Length: 192
Image (tube, rainbow, N blue to C red; front, side):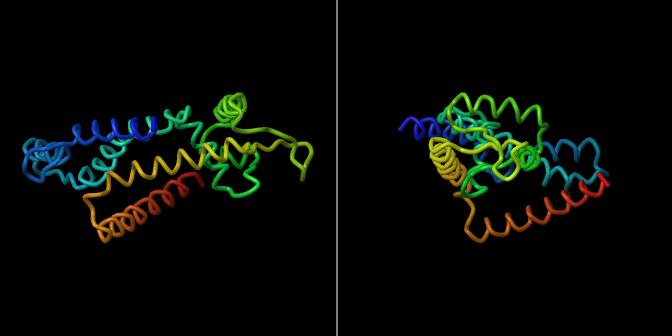
């Protein structure tokens, strides 16, 4: 019940934060309009896309963080236990597999693992395949909590998409996948 109420409160806050005038313009349209007056020769279409992505992320972040907090987790801790949970049974990964998947430093991961182990959500043990290395794995409570938090998070995030039809959601997801894929390929090329 506590999870539901917390998500509901944050959802109501979010809806108030994005309430606009009676027209279909949004925050980004207003910014683009201001730039159009000041720099009429400049194409602001990138702002129409990336600015909206940034604004959406900022508007939903409090709800997502509140959801995880209602389970006694911060976002980083949830990232670790959800990565372990979606890896499948036996829900164990090496620290290298974890920090590569999470794109964080090994030091940042160590602090998260320490907190999660103290909370009884993970355990660390010697690898059965290689006794020299360690693996991190979910406890039964960690499995339960990761799944419960993810289910509540997905329900909360789905509530933000209700104004889009199924077809619009599918189209938007495909376009975002295409953009993200090109950006990831570009970023990978920069590292070579």
